[in-house]
Length: 248
Image 1 (cartoon, rainbow, N blue to C red):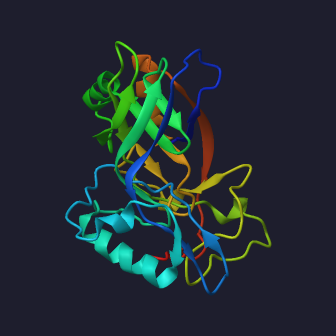
Image 2: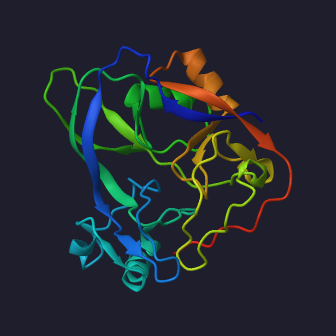
C-alpha cells in the first residue's frame, strides 16, 4: 500500500479562504512534570455535539488550565466521541463556525482541517473510498453560488517510524504526552501501525498530518478533484518505539 500526505495546492488559482473555528473545544493545559503550557488542536471531531454537557460554557473559551482540570473536562467529552477518537489539548468539536469567501477547489486545506465539496464527497463514496465522514459546517458566505463545504473527520491511526526521528530525541512527557521534537523533515511511517480499513486518517503521534492511501489519490485523479496535492511518504517495516502516553 502507498501512502501520501495531503497538502494545500498553492499553485492553484483558487482564492477560497475561511476564518472559522469549531463551536466547542478543550482548553490547553499546563503540565507540572515537563513544565509546558501547550495546545495542539489538530485532533478535531466536527460530528461531536457537546450540548448534552451541562457545563457547556467550559468548552466555549480558549485558555490554558491545570492538567487536572483539563482531564476532568476530557472525561465529560469522552462518552460522546466516535470509536477510535483521541483527545488532545485544544481539540475542537462541532461544526466550523465563521466566514468564508472566494473560489474553492473540490478539496480545501485550512491548516490541519480538510474540507470537501458535497459533490466531490458523493463521488468518492461511490468509488468505495473507506473512512469518509463529511460533517456540515456553519460557514457564512457573502457571495452568490457559494459551495456546500463539509469538513472531513479524520481519526488518528498509525505512528511515525523511529528511524526518521532525531537520534537524541526524548520520549514524550509521561504526564501530558507532549512530544519534545518537531515533525521530521522527511517523515517515514511505521508500516506495522497503519490502518487497512481507512483511506483517510491522521497519525496518533503527529495529528497535524492529513494522510491518505494510494486508493484515495487515484480516485481523486480519476475524478478530477483538485485543490490539494499529494506528497508520497515512505512506509517502513520495523518495530516502533513505545507509544506516547496521552494526557487523556
